[in-house]
Length: 383
Image 1 (cartoon, rainbow, N blue to C red):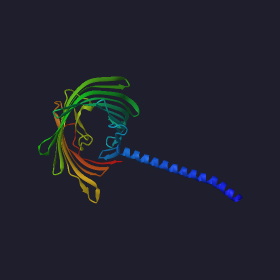
Image 2: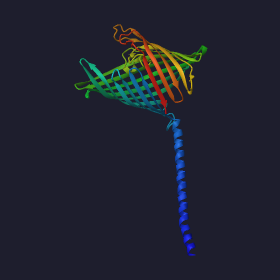
Image 3: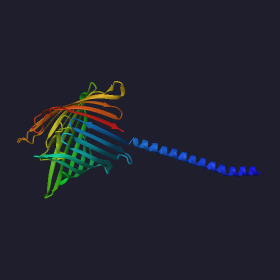
Image 4: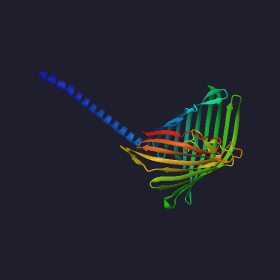
């Protein structure tokens, strides 16, 4: 009997303990399952709204790379968020720059608001008679843009654009402070655009932009300060013709700008350089007035042999740009011409691009035709 009493006492103490332990394990398992489910839900939610990408570009002189994050509708619908880190360097010029930029856009009271903020650090070399100085500095930049639709009239869409830009810049030579500069630019513009289907499968789009504004610039040196204010106006016309022929996508586009007076650097039109086409070997042509014409041809995509996940295509481009030559007293329009060929390989979230471009002709005294073409290899991958 005594043995039975001891066994009963042992069971009374042990069974609740086992039950509680099993209950705890069940609660822990349920908690782990809920946490995993929540993590999967968050991952699925963000994967449809966030895109992470990176690219690297190498050519004869310059290397560049960037890492970017873009988000759309993460918290509120139609709100856009972007982050970008960029690093560039030139072997020939000995300069380079690193920058981190933030972009946020959202609808507000019938307007599309966009804020851009960027912080950057740069380095370079200044060559003077008998010496060479290392330079460095930093730059802060912001831009606020408000775009509002004014409706449509006879198939032409009208938009009003108000923009304010500000930046500060500090420059050092051999670690010694040289100057600080500040720049402010405010503008208001009217944009009109239209798209039409023409005969023979030809599609045409036209754009016209009229902009007026004011620029303020100040620079502080050791021995004083300078200030400058100026107004500016410009009109820009752009057109694009597109058609598909034998599965090749062909387009002919152009842009021209008029301005009655000198323009800030950000408002000048670029008619030649890497921003338009490769082959200029680091040179660029801008002007207050001028334009360019460009023809592009893109082949249909075909599967890469023994790698069916990848597709390849070929692109061809030729362009010609005109702008006044500042070294010419007559300020005549001088032209530059360039061409490039590009081989593209891409899959779902990967893209490789090899481009060969060459400056074909230059009527300008400030642009020299390089002895060798520009060759660039670019890799881009989404995460």
